[in-house]
Image (tube, rainbow, N blue to C red):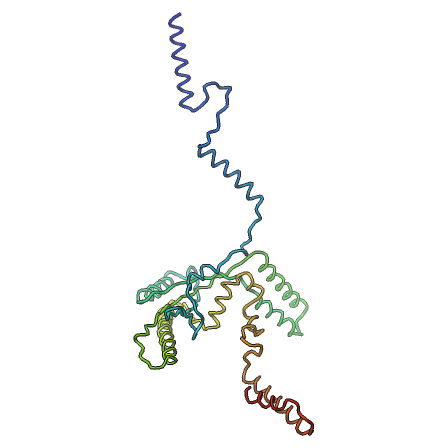
Length: 320
């Protein structure tokens, strides 16, 4: 009898030890208690909460992305645009150039080596710092669509099949562009230079200002020319941005969503960039307006009547 009790006690001890090692309850009919600090349980709980919250939250579109903040970090102390350059405080200037990409992975090994050596040579020859800025813009097919529509309107001898093909192409292009956000990458190189005023010896402040701008432009333009010569061997074209190009770059950076509908070219064509209501006109347009005013004044004089505001017209002719 004693042996049975001893063996029973040993078996019970082994059972309790096994249940403790397996982290199971000693009594099988009782459930496990939830431990608050259990990481695995917290993960499952958090994942369930995330799924619930995601269902409640509205899905954000890629159109809601903001790209202006990184551009502000590039030029935090900007003053304005001067002489195809971005002017900053302490006589610091920045000139930008756009680099046309090449189909690197479509080239053979020898052509890739030429591209690599051209880029490496330019980087090794640089004795100054440069910055690379990449901008993603929405794909704009409006020019291609307008060209097709212009052709359809101007060509009267098109047969019905060709006209239908062009109309279908316009619809497909517009659908492809509006189906989902599509982007194109633009690559820019930023050259920075600070003018040391102590090296410039002038007597007049106006002349000093001109010398500062000239020196900054000549130095930055020299650097862009050097980059153009090195990268040209790798078929990478470097184009310096004018003041209008810099303004366009800023427009697409700070109006990323709006630029798809309100294009920068339309803003320029509608003369919305002018500081005055009478925007800058071409010499031909100015000469045409002058001729019209002179003809009007002469006709009034020949009629012999009282000309109201003739003095104002003469002043206008002189100042136009």
